[in-house]
Length: 325
Image (tube, rainbow, N blue to C red; front, side, top):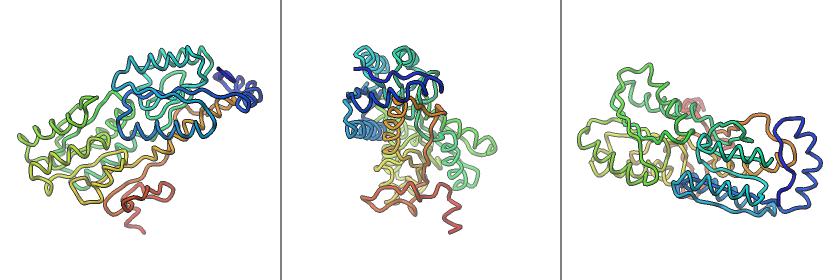
């Protein structure tokens, strides 16, 4: 059943507030969660946490995994709208490729909330990080370790807005470092783990003088480290990344070629997505369509002990903070 129909704009939100709040208290909210690539660890975490958080509030939740198929993902979201669901949560499926779905959600008067999916007209909000800044942070740390020169391999998938923004940060940082040579690789998704391993293996056969690898997200770290180790270059090449998934942090903790990651509080992102839906249904949508959460810089020195979570409330984001302590 569709409840407390959501309208864009402050005036409409104020008008709906009291009625929608009452509806939230009386009716069971139905939320459809879609993800174009649910098997990616970061995406899986956000979707799982969003589902659990919504169910804790007594809401009815259905989840759809697009398995890399954007058309199927869009069709699933449209189906939720046709069935009268009260909100759509999109987990890391590119919003610019879901404009038709977003328009239909607006026409139905329901919130469309996303995580790591980018800005598009009509969304309620996208929850994530300042990915461009994060790309700068990871790249700056890399350049510092390279002393401003060397050969770098960059692996990314520039379809997802969050990854494209990190790419912008990478290139912006290197504008002033002409002595850094870059080999750019576009990874295939789905199949990104195997593709990253195969492409990195082939690159190292013809470029054994690579100094560093920059990956757009942590899922690529393990296959890249494996390729580096199999080439016997683990003492010559280091890897920097972004996301902060458990596998990457474990490799950093062990002192492998994985040097650092800019870690995201993806559990909190899933929770905030549900918070935003609830607020929007009550007539109180956020004032900004882009909501960001603080990341953390994880190195071997700052990685949490195995089995412990990253302390996002107290962690550092810049390497100089550790020196100043």
